[in-house]
Length: 332
Image 1 (cartoon, one colour):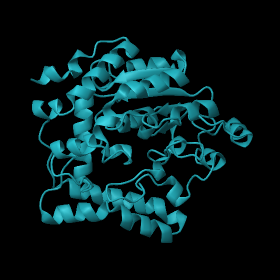
Image 2 (image 1 turned 135 degrees about the vertical axis):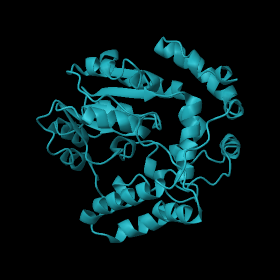
Image 3 (image 1 turned 120 degrees about the horizontal axis):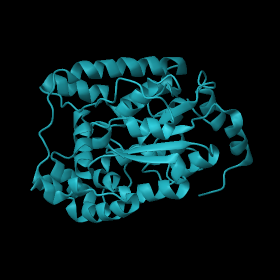
Image 4 (image 1 turned 90 degrees about the vertical axis):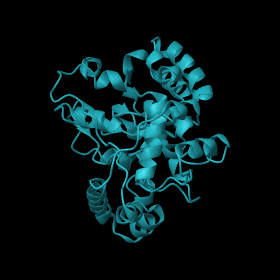
């Protein structure tokens, strides 16, 4: 990773930067985890959902805003640079105003885990940062991500099998992580980067099923040395597919990246966040008319098993835990 400038390092001493990061994985319960953590009086959550700052700094080797959407345009659903919310680390620090006197300031940005240097950059900038990563069955995660893009009318493939074949052909190599379903489910390299950048006392890797299970958030509260609170984590941000022509047209319009980009470029900055909230509310209304996707099948798992199974082997060694419940043959 390129050495950061002295100016960049000095700005990290403002104590208005995050010192707790949830870096992903995507579609693995990070939204619910961030909401639960944010309910604690000792944790201040960044006001923007997924600011993604450390994955798109000038020092990043692979900035999110340089990756592509399926239509071949720049990936603009991650919007901080497009809306000029965070042009530099000082501006990012200012966005945590109100959290200076709170023990933890939380940045929950799912794409940090896939980024080649976001975690290392964050740790270098704020050396005492703690990380809590959440991993989900990689097959289920891939299928959930596919259906999430379908629900927003952003997935060009007609079926999951077509999407996987398209990715395996190499056609999605330059695409943003949200559309690279296998790549994003291969956790071993991602966790190896986390372990290389962050000492064991400052990192925690949780499995999704453990967080929502009987033990719940207990291990997280102990890791952070915080008194536990209720309610415990509940699954959030569930995918619902729009049903009917009118609902699909509405979903397509509300999630049109090019249109959204044009609107953001002409709006005053102060109006961008209210617009986001309005669009989010309208998406919720459309979702109420929809239905949940069909469950993943054993055949869907087989499409990726030759890549995911060896990755699970590596991950078991890294984590020192049994991941049999994730195995492809479990579903047969």
